[in-house]
Image (cartoon, rainbow, N blue to C red; front, side, top):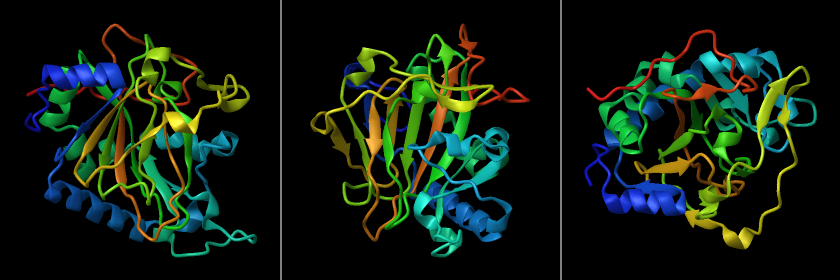
Length: 283
């Protein structure tokens, strides 16, 4: 298969049975370099004193502030949990303290918009049966050396809820992702078991509607990939990543897409947009 997004029957069959698909050389070295350079510029311009938001998949209540909510339509910076000392000061340079930048890079930053809204990305989504795909959020994830935080087992449909469920994750490796530096792990076929819980927003802030099930780590497999590889993730696939305890970072660019054709956007979503995003079309 070429990188245009026209999937073969074997690829579609693998995705439908396993819940994920690895697409090597999806992005060129030039595309990767352009995103990394632009993010470096954004970090250099970022004033850490303007935000004290910490991202954590273990304690989501800490993200239930206005900064988190407003990030749906902005470019916002979220620190690693282990970036600060006991006095609240950064223990290392800001460039090595950020967990992720999100959630609207694909709308507000031309370099990221070009990659996110490319014809090959749109064509890929239509290959999966999307009629009117919309990118609902984007994230640049750093997985910092030594402090890159764990992402606990989860399903993307928990966080971006449509009725019926339509979320797909698109995870683009900007650096080689290995077991050592915190690659993705997934339970193949787990997407067939349905949605286990929802991350909702109500008068009490943001929280899950029920506790997380327990998982046997023996059921997970590592997804080690080279830079430029795109991993397509079914919205119900159970996946995770461990802390990065190595000296090597693991940069990635992640998109989440939903279908807006025949689907209803659930009112309890944490994302409450003022302006609906534009759908992707194949030119």
